[in-house]
Amino acid sequence: MITILNDNFSQLNDFLHEKSFSKIFILVDENTHEYCLPVLLGNMETDLGFEILEIEAGEEMKNIQTANQLWEILTEMKADRKALVINLGGGVITDMGGFVSSTYKRGIQFINIPTTLLSMCDASIGGKTGIDLMHYKNMVGTFAFPEQIFIYPKFLETLPFKELRSGFAEMLKHGLIADKAHWNQLIQIPKLDVEAVAPHIQTSMDIKQEVVEKDFHESNIRKTLNFGHTIGHAVESLCLQQGNPILHGEAVAMGMIAESHLAYLEKLISKEDSRMIIENIQRYYPYLDISDFKDDDITALLLNDKKNVDSKINFSLLSGVGSCTYDHQCSQKNILESLHFYRKLNDA
Ligand SMILES: NC(=O)c1ccc[n+]([C@@H]2O[C@H](COP(=O)([O-])OP(=O)(O)OC[C@H]3O[C@@H](n4cnc5c(N)ncnc54)[C@H](O)[C@@H]3O)[C@@H](O)[C@H]2O)c1
Ligand SMILES: O=C(O)C(=O)C[C@@H](O)[C@H](O)[C@H](O)COP(=O)(O)O
Ligand SMILES: [Zn+2]
Image (cartoon, rainbow, N blue to C red; front, side, top):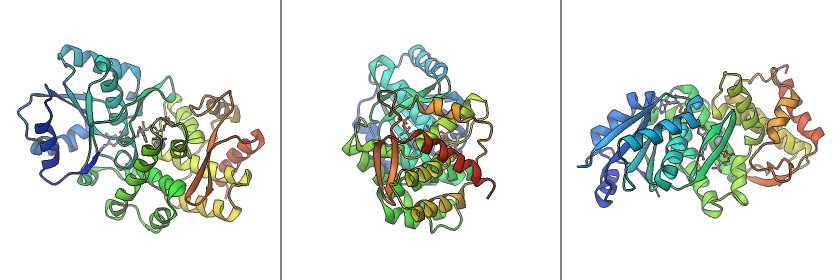
């Protein structure tokens, strides 16, 4: 269940009073500790004891070492099966906190309080939890629903612009795969800021939630939420491997451009639609330099994508503005052509 919090967090306090938790563990990173935790603690009313668990910020922390540290701390602090973990942060915190909670003592309860645009519209919803393995994205994880998701849009006031823009990529994705009107509204935003984006958060959240409700375990339609991620994750992984991480939404924006061209090459969408989509994404996102990555490096990662079956790369590709297919296998020629197309955009 998703609840938009009042300024006094009364719905969160009601939730804490109604349930009988033994103790609360609040997971933050250094930034959400500084900017969001004071707001939460200033409003949270409970007789329960609580502990703060802090990790460094960033995708590089979303790994088994951090998970292990958190499992150990929970054990040392004697967290029992009635403990509650509150994940207060962006997608790294909700993915990590959800993973640690859903595995510790075979699963304790957790709630998500997302603090980035990306985690409000996407990562906190849908119960995908996980960590990266080596440089492969989200390779180990669980499907586990949070007890509740509490959204407090005012957290966005301290979010850096680049992070806001990263989250906007997933909103554009939601429009492109499922709701043309949402896409049309988003691309009318001339300059990204919290005020311009805030009115569209609810629609974006609803799109994600509707898809997840139809197919929690990603057997079919949920794969559409992976549009832009087949190529996007490969590039994100390579950047991570190089020790030069990019933001998830930046990778997804790049992936959506390449995969929109791929959809055109595969005759799923018209050249005009493909161009229109790409030009609009380019309005918000600077060119991502992938010149260091060879076709073979990217292809090797594509071959390890989680959607693949029988070593065949399964793409989720647009079939129109507002509709998306999945399990689409493309010719190798077209996959490479879509990467070359992206590289050439830099020359244009
Ligand atoms: N599980 C899912 O369904 C799902 C969906 C999309 C993305 N993801 C994952 O989410 C992650 C990306 O999430 P993200 O973009 O939120 O990144 P993030 O969690 O790293 O947060 C981005 C940055 O913003 C800071 N921050 C967070 N809230 C802030 C605030 N209110 N004010 C100031 N700074 C703040 C963080 O400390 C961090 O430095 C990736 O690992 C991605 O794979 C998961
Ligand atoms: O919730 C989903 O399903 C998604 O695909 C949403 C994506 O935005 C998100 O990045 C997700 O973590 C990707 O899932 P993965 O299974 O490809 O790791
Ligand atoms: Zn994503």
